[in-house]
Image 1 (tube, rainbow, N blue to C red):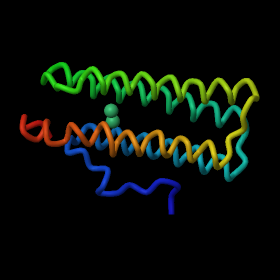
Image 2: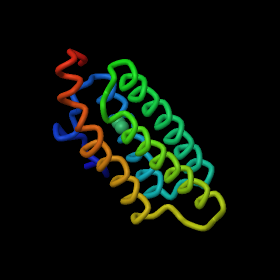
Image 3: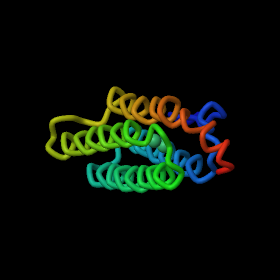
Image 4: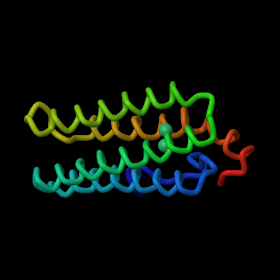
Length: 135
Ligand SMILES: [Fe+2]
Ligand SMILES: [Fe+2]
């Protein structure tokens, strides 16, 4: 069993976003596995870099769709993306500067960070995009 198991409860109705969310879940799982295997700092850092990069890519994809389809909650959703980006960058900085180690509490933070956004803000656009015929 993975640290985060993909579930139908995470289905936001847009294929591209589901795929990207699955990619993000896979990266958090990879980080968890690396932690369990006691991987080196450089391995952990590179997974964190991938997570930051992939998060940025995913957030831009969602924001692009919001603009294109005039999603009414665009501004507050985008603001949440910014806050999440800041959190994950801070997470990495703390790790790099030795102020934190990657353990279960931090992995739990990332799980919450991802899952709560998907089930909260992201889920709110599901019916909107469905009505627009975007899938
Ligand atoms: Fe989002
Ligand atoms: Fe998302």
